[in-house]
Length: 329
Image (cartoon, rainbow, N blue to C red; front, side, top):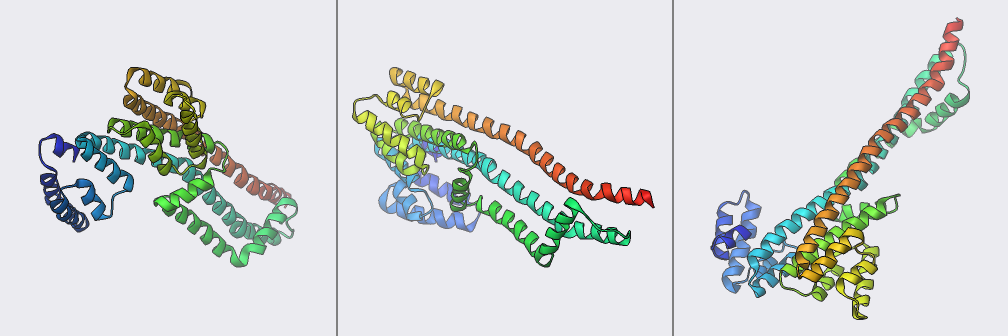
């Protein structure tokens, strides 16, 4: 739509072009509804609401663009906003979901080893005229106690991994898993970076669309679901009510710090607050990606080492006495 409007075509022409290029019946149905409503109302935001598939935030921003005459700019900013939103979701998905799934898979491997492999070693010991002792015996008894339902347990663990993977692909499921991930060490700072990046992108879009800071903060509280960040936003609003500047309130409330707060302060003094917010959003996104890449780079080798130590320890606890017995024969 940004490309269509900036090219001098009308919104109606753009919707008809998009309908002609629609790749599936669902998309055509949505555009049919939008075209019918637009012909009646002449409002793109009304047509988007009528379709029932666009977020309230998006339709609200489009309505603002229509009122202020900046619809092409709003559409361009919205494209970037949702592209960044997708990048943030993908990053958080990797930071929270990936370790959980790997942990479940590691658990499945250990269960298979204890339930399926240890009984085989026990039979070998019996055939050699001896019995297991120490750690192998404990592991064998654990496996024996689970043997009746061992296959079921392994299947349940694997299903759990698949369910978590599927949940991460939906908005509601991802929110639940992120809430669970917030309790893990180091996730709190990652969540703050995520919320700060989303807030900065939102304020950049709001200010460039002609809305005020207060209106942007009102919308930001509705968009952000992180209770800690929402408290920081509330503190920011209170400081502004007491006479603090917007940039100063952002710094003192803990929303932005360091170079991010300095960028906002500079943008406030030069009158380029929207551009400063866009820059802050980009920097937070880069920081978020760097943190997650660094965490993944540490996590994968750590999990490999843990699995190797556990599996190797179990096998060595069995193989060493077994080799001693065989060498004595």
